[in-house]
Length: 117
Image (cartoon, rainbow, N blue to C red; front, side, top):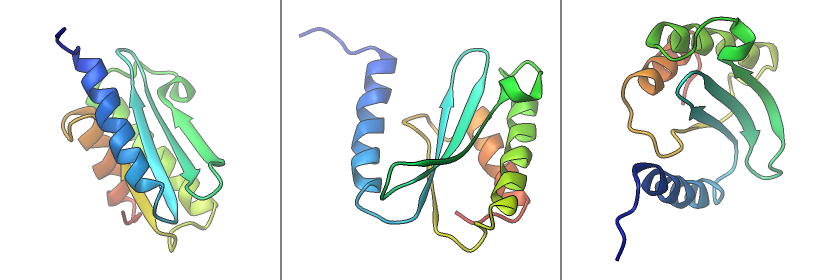
């Protein structure tokens, strides 16, 4: 049997978690990271509709580091406040990535701005 690549394992993990999250209600904060950029979007679980999205492409800075992830977290938190979603149930979807580095910095920056998930 062929060995699965790291990305295939991550995708399998992401699909398992996404299936469990789809059984809940509320809003899913999904994160995707590439080598150069970080992307995040708020998705309504029941309808699958994207409420808002941000990426390091919007910031105009190199997105492959922790500093850019923190800036992106602050930007998304401000969008959440604009949409009046502070009281909504938000679930953080790491997309199979380990909670470390850019993903951790992004999540903590959003939490530091007053968003609870």
